[in-house]
Image (cartoon, rainbow, N blue to C red; front, side, top):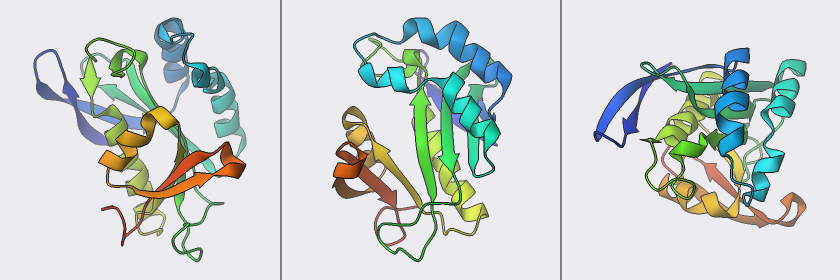
Length: 183
């Protein structure tokens, strides 16, 4: 899927593409991302894309995607979604696309870099999850559990804050639902 992300250096939107996750994206993670992940970001340890890739290729209900700019062809963000086993917290009758993991490259993070290289990478991936939800007949409903440092991002996306869930390490659950956020 074609999209655009914002290049900070010259303040322009540049063409990008979201594709199915591939070995090339895994190689980019190992080559470019891993050495730049700051050790103090403890949650990053659990976002091991070697393990995520194994999950993705071994189960039919998982899909993984990556976003690259057309010019650089380096992975700028990655997302793993589950498409069959989650239901809306607002209306349990409705299926959703559940975002297991959404991660932007270390050089695109506000807290990791003085000036991110690209912005709107996470937004593009999240909108893609919403599109997948529509394609699957789930009315564009998307849900996820957020790390504390990402909660503001999801609120800024107009996702509905459904509160913390003790069974999910007290992470806050967010959902795009027709009557809540604007899918």
